[in-house]
Image (tube, rainbow, N blue to C red; front, side, top):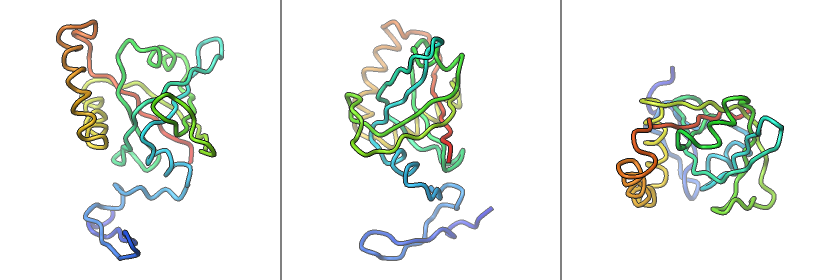
Length: 167
């Protein structure tokens, strides 16, 4: 395991910096495609139906560096179509997009595998997404709170998707 502070590099304006995080928590991927996915505000997450029809959905994502440099996650409703599609096939593709799912021109398509998780592990994903999106997530969480307490999402477990990208 790397020593804390052992990861270094160039920061803004070419200034050197020493990270307070160990290397295992740094995005050490050399793939520009993976870096583009981690940096994107939204990604088009494409899973397939049983009949092979691809379904694209724009989602918020957050890197999950504690699981590896090519891993990210996002939260979902336990009954979402994505969860149902991933129950029969875990092969997915992702690509940077806008809030409406329009693909960013020239952006890379990256394939990977996805798994649906719940409980404490899903809460870690939610926390990573909340950290990445900050105030915007806090505003959105008000809607989530009302849905969980008064809406159709009542009594559903915290659920998330963890995607491992092929390097």
